[in-house]
Amino acid sequence: MKHDAALQYLAETRDFSSDQTLGRIRELSRRLGDPWRDLKVFHIAGTNGKGSISSYLTHILCAAGYRVGWYTSPYLERFNERIRVLQGFDDLQKYDQDNRLGEIDDDSIERIMTRVSRAADSMKEDGIMDLPSEFDLITMMAFLYFREKECEYVVLEAGIGGRLDSTNVIEKPLAGIIASLGYDHLERLGDNMKSIMYEKSGIVKPGTSVYAYDPVAAMISGDDAAIAKSTLEERCLQLDVPLTWIGRNQFDLLSYTRSGQSFRAHANGETYTTKLLGVYQPINALLAAAAAEDYVSPDAVVRGIAATVWPGRLEILSQSPFVLLDGAHNEQGCRALVESLARLTEDSSVVFLTGMMQDKDYKEMLKIVLSAKQYESAAVIFTQVPDERSASAESLLEAAGDALASEPEQLEMHAMSDYNKALRKALSLAQSKGAILCVFGSLYLAGAIRISMRELQDEACD
Image (cartoon, rainbow, N blue to C red; front, side):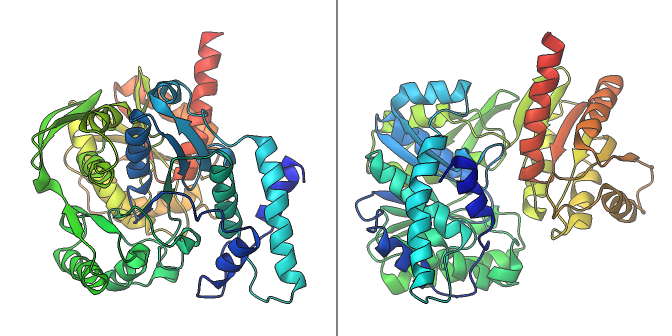
């Protein structure tokens, strides 16, 4: 199976299974020799921040000198990003300079997908009705690759939910981490916080310590936070596993600039620095640190957190004009973006470039960001995400008009379907207004804009 054929096989497979059990992934795994069984896994579920936590944890483990398998989703620019192996601190420094480092290579995708597809096809031949989903196949590819590379630890990010997620085929992770919760994928997880936390907490296993983002800090309502806490606490009590909550009362912020932030943890008095700019990042870093502390030295934690990079999450793409790229794609992410921008604008106004998916509450998301009083919104360009599920630029413009109808001043707004043209327009406006440019609304848009910005920067250098 060639590389393109392997990706086409995945593309033609259903995104999700109708079978509300883990039976299909377990059967697929059995036919492939259960490649996850000898892996030492840290398992991460949640709505917002899973990727950041996984990056902190991978960096901490690599700072301790380990070979680490790292499984994330979705990808920003290339499918290969989802599965990678990094070893030691040298790899971390190289990854900081080249985010492609450690990605699974095309030849390995071809070779491993041949095995996985044969196993999946054999299930069909044997009359099994509910066949593996696309995510099932990719997850098994990751396990096979990590076993082949003899990874000493694996950082495993769940896709949607947790209880029925393909990654939950593993039986006894070293730790379970629950990231910040929000209202995403309601059609699969339920439309209330009890149901959402029930699904996420499905990764909790007997004998496994649990570390969770305190819902009080998750920018959800007080009632939802209380429900989320009680739901996870009941799950951990039933399984008799220790649960540690980490929130804003576990650290003191010492400094915050455009180059990063430093904070002191209450638990051990240690001072940490991180290059990641989100106001929630100290919590994500401390969650990773708590999960890893039994396996690495305190120095490795400090070095790993300081070295952590994670593309597309309040990432600085340019200094002149100052361009921020953020994957905020739901209401909680937008509220966090507002709080971060309040610290990062440094009295500059903001030009926004945004594209969003149809299934998001984009009217509310736009209202949160564009009507914020913590900074001056100078203009906004609406564009389309390079995905068939994208909302149109015109529908976003209309929604913004409705959301801002009561605002005293009319915001300059433009709709441009072509995101490359929209980016050029946004950069021009930011330069003429002396504003910063903030791109947000979708990780799919973030990936496309990263590529476009590199191309523009390369043009400027020619």
